[in-house]
Amino acid sequence: MNEVLAEKIKMLPESPGCYIMKSHGEIIYIGKAVNLKNRVRQYFHGAHLPKVAAMVSRVDDFDLMLCQTNFEALTLECNLIKKHRPFYNILLKDDKHYPYLRIDPKETYPRLTLARRMDAKDGAKYFGPYIGATAVRQAMEEVRRFFPLRTCNLALPLKAPRRPCMHHQIGQCLAPCAGLVSEADYQLILKRVVDFLNGDSRELIRELEKEMQEASGRMEYEQAALIRDRIADIRQLMEQQHAIQTRDVEQDVMAVAVDEQDAMVQLTHIRGGRMEGGRSILMAGCGGDEPEQILAQFLTQYYDDEHLIPRFVLVQALPEPLEELERWLRERKGGAVELACPQRGDKADLIRLAQKNAENALEHYRQSEKVKYARTVLAMEELKEALHLPTLPKRIEGYDISNTQGVLSVASMVVFEGGLPAKKEYRHFRIKTVEGANDFASMAEVIGRRFTHGLRERHEREQEGKPSEGGRFSTLPDVVLIDGGPEQLLFAHRAMEEAGASVPMFGLAKRFEEIYLPNQQDPVILDRRSNALHMIQYVRDEAHRFGITQHRALRGKASIQSELSKIEGIGPKRQTELIRYFKGVKPIFEASVEELCQVDGISAELAARIVQYAKEQQKR
Image (cartoon, rainbow, N blue to C red; front, side):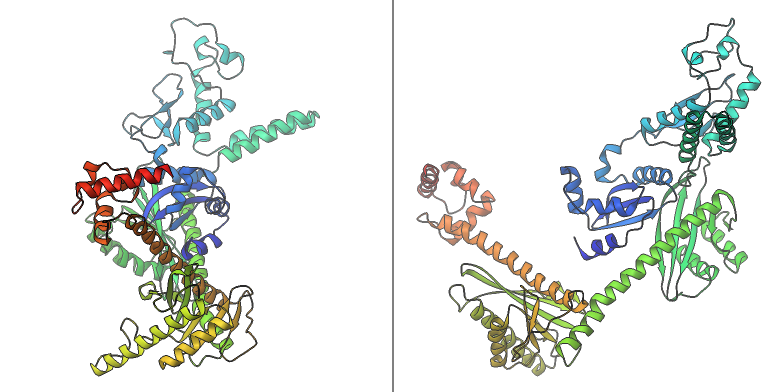
């Protein structure tokens, strides 16, 4: 897990919404959650199924879109998946349209049916879309629980009444086929269904509350409790959602969050009536300005950068000068554009939702900046004070030794600049003068070579009229970290002085995280929560990781070469040709004489020798 992920996970909000997993900037998965904090954290802790584990292993960043309700998050997830078609949402990706509920008013007794696509010209009312057939059927079942609409496909009215079906017997149909309900009464029920599906359940709830009170007055408390639960179910089902509209509208929604230093503009795109996504954009240095001032700056900067201008732009506050801005937008678009600041209704709810996202994004940015500042500037200041350094340690070099029982010893040098890794400055050293597992002497060799080379390079650059810094080793550190205790530090410090350099140096002993300084017996103990300790632990761990990586690579290469070198006539050049041709050692020992002869430099006799060696190894 990288630092970006770690910090984002710490600051996850406890809010409904959608999360957008990314890998190198590409969206690979989109999901929704009732509680983003709990759901997103689960991905990065514990075991998962292979598919989920594969997805998580690629994630290096994620974005959030906060919603007001879980139903809104669910619908927004649907729209985002259809737009971006992420790889790991493959089970939701197809060419089908997401289903709607449909009522055709041209029918004598209209039914509630499922539709795969919305036809704006057929005069029918559409509700949705819903994510999958299961979701739309659940919605139909909820309607049937409260409203006795017919479900059959009979062409009504019939020439002669017929006997009511079972749905009438259980109270789920008024039996218009039997002439038991008039068209006017049926239309009243249908109107309540439309209101219900549009999110207006007030009349139904009032009736149920009246029934509940009557049942309670009759002391039928169990019946009253059942009605109470039905009311709760209806209210939960009818969560107002703003991620979908059935009208074909084109809007951008903008809201602002401001603190003392900066402002964050939340921009949400609605296309074809659907919320298709959004983004948070930092307006640096706008802290303290009024929202209308910030939006005026944002509008002209954003839409001047070849972004599509919609028919309607909904804003938190009307920017000034309004007429000039609208005229500028119309000229840019080449068509009508309207700036509006809704005060009530669904559009005002969209503004409030955008503002909620803006506030969350600004808080996230501010916390990230605070954490970054604490882990870099404050950490360097704390380290300077703790070690009594003459200057702020803007460049820290960390060193570690890696070997296996003294074989293939390698040293790593990592560089942190401004408290952050400068990976282009990392270096590896092969140990040349030390035999066996002698980390003290190995560290002395590396430090001596690094500073001897660095001082020589500085001198050469100065003679050439170049800046002393900027070469491969000529930029000297402000402080050096040695992975080890006082003995390791002693050898390293002596080697540096013999090379002619004088740079502050300290050792970090891993067992108790104690800091040792040259010529000082007692260690320096930093608070385990201090920024300075966290930073130097990061440097030490990076040096260890970087060294281990190189050592494993060398060990693998040596293992391959030693295995092939046991065969007479196979030298380094032929080893390289064989490995290049067969892409590994195992295929070499599985190849036939004819296949081996295809490699440059491998004769039939030598190929037979390789095959014989492979057979002998199998017998063992």
